[in-house]
Length: 339
Image (cartoon, rainbow, N blue to C red):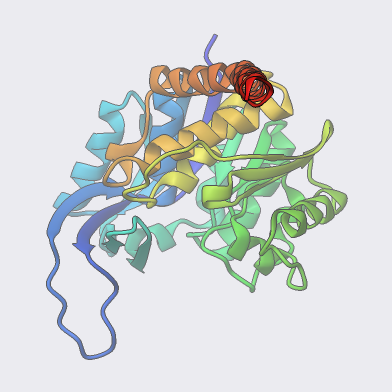
């Protein structure tokens, strides 16, 4: 039976520019490409979970415009239940301007629009969805009050509350303490634990331990090309990243969070769930656009299997290398003895 995941979050239309670098103030910079794509952290995580074979219900708000119709239609096409999406005639659908550098790094300007129309009262109308869900995915792109109420009602309903605390907001440092799983990146972790040093793996592990000590079940920190660290009931661990060439990291964090949610709800162990989430993020970073880049379950399982095969083969390669070195050494000694 598929795990059931509710996502309360934002839904945006993304306008994406490919640029060699970010422009400086007053500069007009020629870009090398442009496209539009569905996005928004909440919608991205909903699509990511659906492509991983979860049963997903999305709760959010769009404007009464063509963009809203297109964005909701895209979610429905992924098999997501969009019956709980509200239309606000007084606002526009959320939009994002995304500049993606040739390195794959991105910068985003967000106009939240109807996403900010979601209120705590809206959330309370969907208690039945939360009660029927295994997990609730939340982000920080709605109002503080709305996200806090969603977390409270999720815990009350008995589902696992998973918070992706993005974008980083120093105004709500304690919201994450009322969740079960928190998944920040290095910058967001410093907003949650202001005196933490997340510049190294060791510092990230220490920060994750502190977050778990504050009451969450799992603290999973996304470290980009260094993989992730997880502190949870099975201990603390650094899980290295997959070896890839990133072209667009826009939805990599969302893919990671959704992957971790699905894996934990399916009962995978802490390390297995982290590796699965790493693979989701890596595959998303290998494609362009937020939702277009999100991987299917088959691709994730293939990457995880390849990673295991490589790890299992490593001792054999090392042993073969030592054997070749010994053989060469014996030949050298034989030659020197013959001379």
